[in-house]
Length: 449
Image (tube, rainbow, N blue to C red):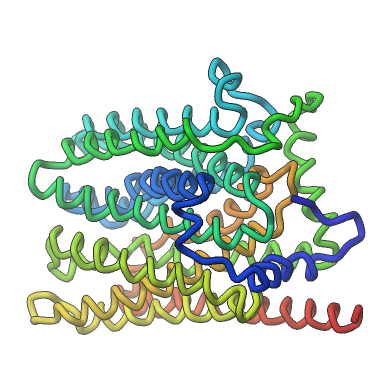
């Protein structure tokens, strides 16, 4: 992979993956069976997808049924905070080999395996907690799970970006996202079904055991060439963190700050909405089986379709047009949950309203996510892949996470319906900024040609 030379503007580079992918016309399915990198990306994505829902989204059902107050549940969205701060330690994972196993597996794969072991340990710790009577235990192990899961994301994303060329990134990103969706299905529907039959303790132990295939994938995944580079000279803490940020801003030029602001706001409405989705479903009298079947299983297949659609649209319509469509679609979809809050009570026979609202939300969220992931992947440079992608994903998550922590208070003040209307409105300025960036880039390309 080649980064931008200093002074070269971002627009040409951002469009390059789409142009090259279209020229190649590569099959979507064949590489999964013929390219070990793509297959490994799928299975590593599964492991990444499992950790995050089990910190809060799935666990919020457990917390709600345990009688934890809705305001407290809203504040506990902060348990995912390590995902928002992962850019602080990502540069060190780019620079240094892990202890003990680094010589065998290489830098990125070694950190992946250590992080996966940490995820499994965190899940077992949560399993032996009791949020109804000992919430502190649950919080402590959830935070530990968050740190391990965030580290896993850093290293998997760095491996995914470093192991393929820029032209192959849309394909790799799509399959990694499909794996991530499969992981969320297991951690969502799977955990809910097991919890309904055998209790939450068994469910979390089973989730820990299911991490094993992803560990096998980490062991046998190809090693990126950049992992063989010698460890760079040590820098102080501040310089280590600042180096990838400076590299990113230098390459993006005058669009650097607007692009980072757009990234920061892109999924804000989605994070805030997600925090109260499961509490809404429980309030509307839907059972754990209903939530598992509709939200997790049915939602998974729609999300899978949206991911494939996003991967198909990017090389055909361009990255920026697809990105703009994604932010508008993703934000507007929250209105379906507002409608559900008004007319979707299970006791009133509104099951199909529930199915419709969940379907719209799941499809839109997944579409916006894969487009954003591909966009951010094209912005990274070779030597700082994990650091820069972690920085951008932290920017995506941090504002939404902070706002989501107040979601329970907001719902109590205005009700579920107006809450979800508000989450849709959040997306309007982000869409306007995305449109402006697209216009600016198009103007720059025209001036060059």
